[in-house]
Length: 168
Image (cartoon, rainbow, N blue to C red; front, side, top):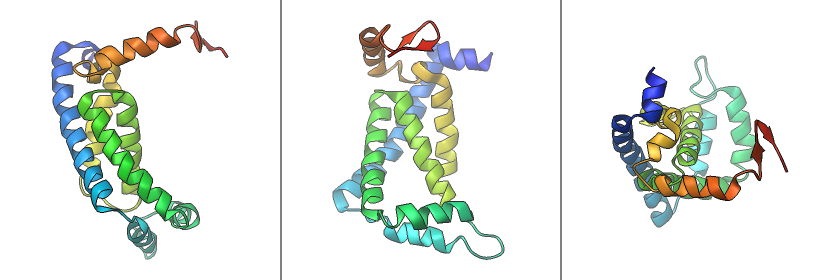
């Protein structure tokens, strides 16, 4: 019953718009400052790896191994992806454009930050983003998705998806 309501109700669309604007503002301000002022994630990444030791580590060993083997050697790429990813996720959520995709990539970043031992507002952002993801199209109905999603559906109808199977 709740799922149907959050996915179809006009009242839910209004509430989701407020949530979407709050989460989007959080992302866009964080991303803007990183893009405008410059951002180097290497210190954060090394700090996360340092928190993977001890009796009760804040960072799991498998995540620390990923950070050491992939993220730290490519810190400039990860810095770029985080800064622009935050900015673009925020823009998508504020405009209500490709809302579900923006929310998905936002929650992926939130989980990466949580896995790295940073709690801050990430847990709250994850919870709010889950509502946006569950709502699907309704979360962006009061936004550009009202026009963008029908356009995309019209342009791709029958090209990739027909009756439950993917076609080439």
